[in-house]
Length: 195
Image (cartoon, rainbow, N blue to C red; front, side):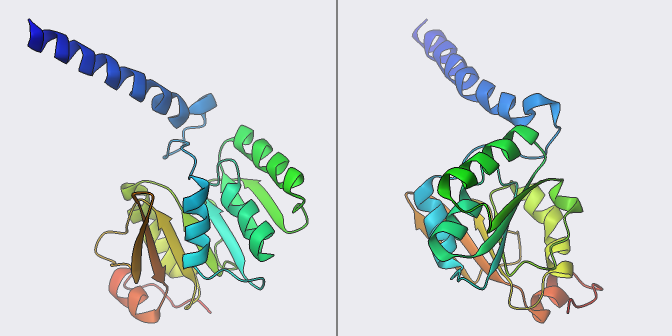
């Protein structure tokens, strides 16, 4: 009887945790590949620091949610930044957050699928996606990004493309890569080099 109660309690807890994630996953029927789970601000700060973001950078956040990475890149470093998300509510929220931070002139938010986004102008790309999405995105990153472009991912790596650095902040992993011709040859063979 005690085991049955524990199992029932465990199932109830799982449902309470899973339902909000399921609701966020396809919030409003937008059919995205990734649930909306905001990156904590200390992790945002560490991601941008690890990428060595500077005023002359162009930061792209793929799956930008409420825009906190984009806004922080502009406010803290003076960088130009853009966020891309499928959910118009997130884009609206991100624009409001940029307005409140006074960085509207440095940022833009675009309602667009990250797989349809032209990445060539980015010098830094930030991600908080899922492992399978990172792997599907990897060839596009390597095909479109110029050598020297930095990529930072919260929580998830890119399979056999080992990161140049990995750190932990508040028990959360952050992965960092620099796009190179060697990485392009090793992990996106047959892709023309970006210039």
